[in-house]
Length: 131
Image 1 (cartoon, helix red, strand yellow):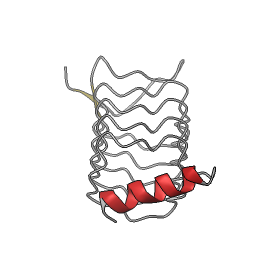
Image 2 (cartoon, one colour):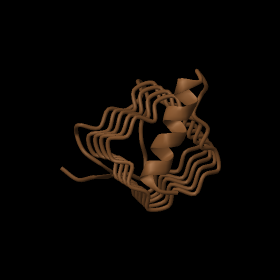
Image 3 (spheres, one colour):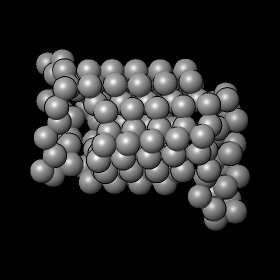
């Protein structure tokens, strides 16, 4: 799915007062840098190697989504549901995950920085600090 199509789906849903539904969407390698995906349903979406730097994914449902090797640098994931998600090798440098649900998420090899903001009380394991 192309960037333009994703943005149109989001706009159309919001114009109708609905939640954007991209559940199970194939967004492999999609360029979604700086796109507002806040509150969107991306459950079980395939976002492997997607470009999501500086994207707004606050309150988004990413349960069981495949975000392996995606670039989420400086993304806003505040309150996002990432339960059961695959975030292996994902770039999370400078990302904000405050209040995010990371239950059962696989963060093995995820790259983070000292600027990455984790949910209160959450202790990440298997991650790589890049600075």
